Amino acid sequence: MKIAVLGGGTAGFIAAAHLTHYFPDAALWHIFDSRIPTIGVGEGTTPRFPLWLQEVSGVGPDEIGERCGATVKMGSAYQGWGADNTDFVNRFQPPRLYGYHFDAGRVTDLISDHVRATHIDGKVVSLVTQEKGVLIGFEDGSQLHCDYVLDARGFPKGAWADAPMDPDIIRMDWIPTGRAMVRRLPPSADTSMSRSIARRHGWAFQIPLRDWTSCGYVFNPTLSTDEEVLEDFDAFLESEDTEPTEIRVRVSFPNFMRKTWFDGRIFTIGNAASFVEPLEATAIGATIMQVRTAQRWMTDHGSKSPLSDPAIDHANQTMRSYILRNSLFIAWHYACGSQWDTPFWTLAANSLERAEKHAYLARHMNAMKDFLDAGRDLPGARIGACTDPRRWESDVLPMLTKYIPFGNFSELNFAQVGHGIGYYGANKWSAGDNVHG
Ligand SMILES: Cc1cc2nc3c(=O)[nH]c(=O)nc-3n(C[C@H](O)[C@H](O)[C@H](O)COP(=O)(O)OP(=O)(O)OC[C@H]3O[C@@H](n4cnc5c(N)ncnc54)[C@H](O)[C@@H]3O)c2cc1C
Image 1 (tube, helix red, strand yellow):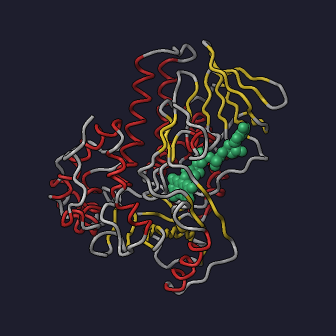
Image 2 (image 1 turned 30 degrees about the horizontal axis):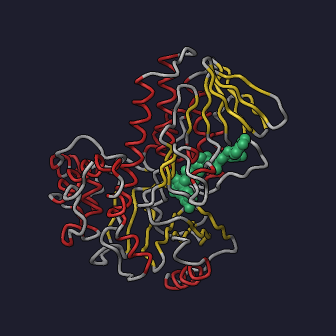
């Protein structure tokens, strides 16, 4: 089998290492243009990443810690969110699971040790799906024919709000953010959780790595200027009694999803396929899901993949459902606003009301209602405080009523966030009351 991975960011390297591991006999090309930079951010993961890394490379927390300055992440800690301004955590469930905080560049270096592929440094200018594969066209006029392509070339042009509408792209106007300012701080004493702190123009994250803490301010560029955000960013850092280094990056991002991420020959993965703002750090986990689906498809079909098949529609539908549900869970974090009464928080608190206007979300919003109900009956703060895997088995596991997730999240995550933001007291947005479709 001949397979090409396009893109040398986190998603491209994950795909190339995964295929190296599962298809040692395939002819594998890893193609990216060294003149086009990677996005460079993406420093917190869900438990999917450590499990995947261990599987394909045998690398565990000690080695990634030593080589990449990574730390173990047990979940996210929230401050200033919701109706009551109480601190809360959304701990990974069960608590034996963990993610990592890491520097994206150092981790792609580590992953690259586990890639065996022919590397081409060049710009891909065309991809044409054919009955028997994909024709890749390069800037210099050369071509390469493969059975499959995994396309991880980063955000597509059509995802941006000012681009002409692309019928294959859903722009998620229910997510209220679109830009981040990112800086570096000295290392933190407690590295066990990512922090998300509500601020006047959005929210600030702190991702504690071994050698520094990455700190970002996520906001909506149509509501606040960069200058306003930097002013509040400084005020926030001053309130934390910490000084940033000189390193400062500004990253704009679209919240979007491709309706068709797989056409029978091309799998679009990573930021090229979808992105939902970094709250809850779901992007790398989604990439791993995509790469696993691709691997299973190639194993089942070999080079004789059809171009039209109900299973292709099913693969697209499953991924759409996963990403849309993650986006709704993330939007719900904003439902009770925050301690800040500003244009950002007014827009943010109405995120789910905006989502309700999209008929294609109705099914997912109705499904979410069951999870909201299940979370109401669970002791969110007690679940978040349970760190002992054995106590979890005896105290928390018996409380579970649903054994399926909503996107990446379970009723235990709903309980932690819902009680944390004061949703069950305020009951501001109630899915299913007026959702049709
Ligand atoms: C502010 C912010 C914070 C984030 N935080 C997190 C987080 O905590 N956790 C998380 O999981 N994710 C996070 N993300 C998402 C993160 O960006 C992605 O998880 C991850 O970096 C995947 O990027 P990528 O590999 O898809 O694309 P990119 O990093 O953009 O890489 C694209 C690659 O494609 C190549 N390329 C582009 N065009 C061509 C071409 N025509 N021909 C050849 N090569 C080409 C480029 O050279 C590059 O190598 C965050 C994103 C933002 C914006």
